[in-house]
Length: 93
Image 1 (tube, rainbow, N blue to C red):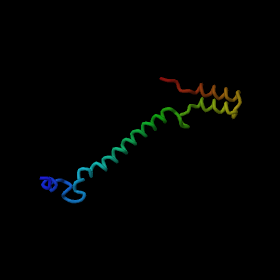
Image 2: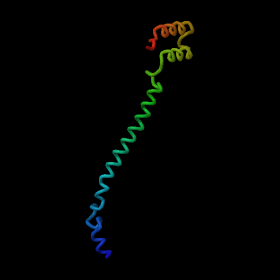
Image 3: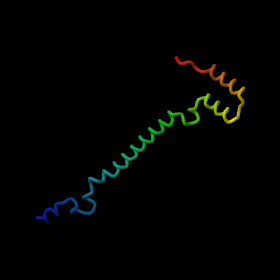
Image 4: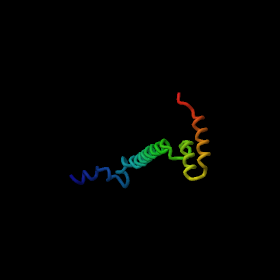
């Protein structure tokens, strides 16, 4: 009885034939891995861009305040530029 079961078992047909259904799981695993990584890293990138941690996301007033704090400009120039920035700011509609 056991010899009849062994003869009909999928792994009894030859090397590699019994792993046929699993052949599709390897590419599926890698595709899913790349999709998950893309989604996770994409979400982090969008969050990073939304927080303004990069040079174009900073406001002009913050840049001006940083230059004043570093001593690049004096108080008179800081206040004059700040006044210009606030006067030219777009009004919300």
